[in-house]
Image (cartoon, rainbow, N blue to C red; front, side, top):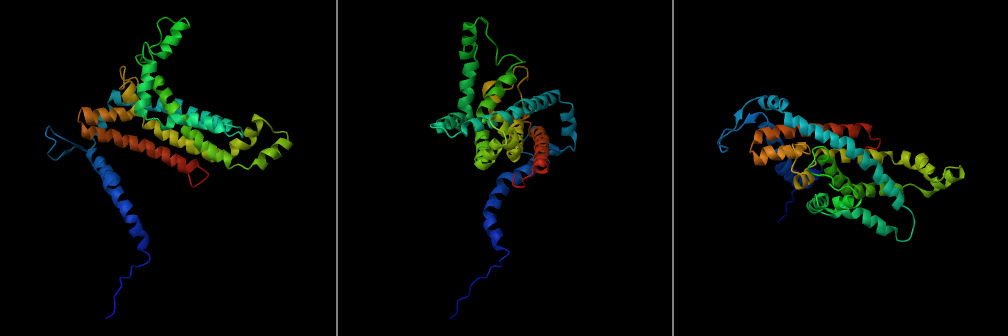
Length: 294
């Protein structure tokens, strides 16, 4: 009695391996994204159990007239303008410093990377205590002669910048590691040849390090830009968007409309705009990056 074996075409085998991952992505990412896109053109009534009503572009017209949304969008772009350049430049300086072949340098690398592994919830609570009216920062300022202190989180002019400090503090070590990997891939012979030609000290980093690190600079710039558009945890923990929406970002405004006001359709519209912004940043990454891996 002969045994029959099932022969699978070679072209189908790779897709069989991909199917479990694609299936999970489909039910957790792609289907919710498509559903959120469709909800942007509808509106729920008072009964959320009923099917939503098709309203076309009404949600987008409402969004165009929403002053709070434009204010949060401005705050988000302010995040991009302030945070991204700092997270592109300063981690590179740190990476150069900790890339030295010195005894105990690994301790400094660990110290700079420690904020990355700390939960944002813990970091937000700790920094909120530091920013408090009787916190460490104001106590130090009072000792230096500033009796009233500074309203770090209660001032409409300072709140968003105080939150930015936490984002930068959390991100420095993460991007430092990315740069460190790039620095360690540069052959020492290039620096030795540069030293013979008279390029030494910080000059060698201008002549050699920066040109060779360009793909990593672009990578960090795009990653930090996308992360800045999705800031939520630090705002939620430290200011909850206040005072007077001065620190409210697009993602936090989306959260408010979706989970506090239960305005699901309008929140999906905000999410679609945010998706388009991130998509544009990703396309820029693909266009300007010289390395297709990035």
